[in-house]
Image 1 (cartoon, rainbow, N blue to C red):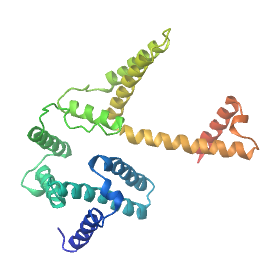
Image 2 (image 1 turned 90 degrees about the vertical axis):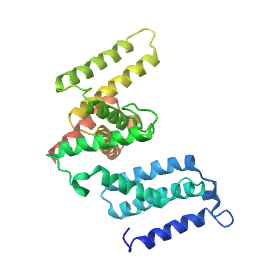
Image 3 (image 1 turned 180 degrees about the horizontal axis):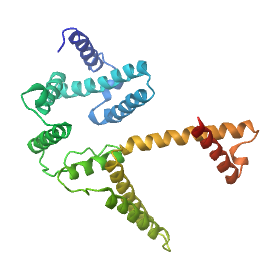
Image 4 (image 1 turned 90 degrees about the horizontal axis):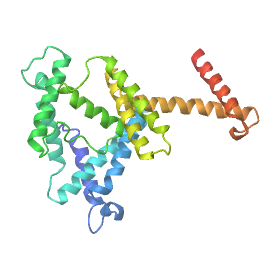
Length: 269
């Protein structure tokens, strides 16, 4: 590790150790364990992503520090239990990166980016086989991932072994088929909410598959759609307020007209 960086890392590790000191440490930090820290780690990762999305580089620096602290916290917990320490974490990721990039750190040569990616997947498969009792192709895809992201990873794994359509037509047909199955359940009398939810899940999974074939990250696409809707809705609220009314005083027709005006204004910019 760079000699200029090591003292700062050592300081951070020492701070963490003091926070966990049984006699003089922080009561909150002393109460934590691996499971209790997980929600904070997920929250910090999202805050990093949000800061990057906002292009707020001061916040990015701060949020990256918060995320690094999560790694240090887990490492301290593991050190106390004799499992591993921070140096083991750093050594592990360093070895992995070197192993997965033989074209950079070794003498391997690949024809193009696709070949590099294929080698990456081969190396990952070897790693999964070495450390997992579950030898399924789908082993070790984290359950805690956002559902859209996890669906995408499942499909990518299957596609890497040829379990995938090789053209867009069948993918689109599948989306249409799943939508028809949702509506077939909706018109049943009485409705079975469990079956509707199941068919909606299939529809969403097929939409993720369409996104993947179009090389669109579904989680990011939905985040952008959320932001667009929120931006437009906030403008509708503002416009209605400027007319001296509130949303609940407007009919749906009036709100739809206002929504269309907002869309046109955006398109004309």
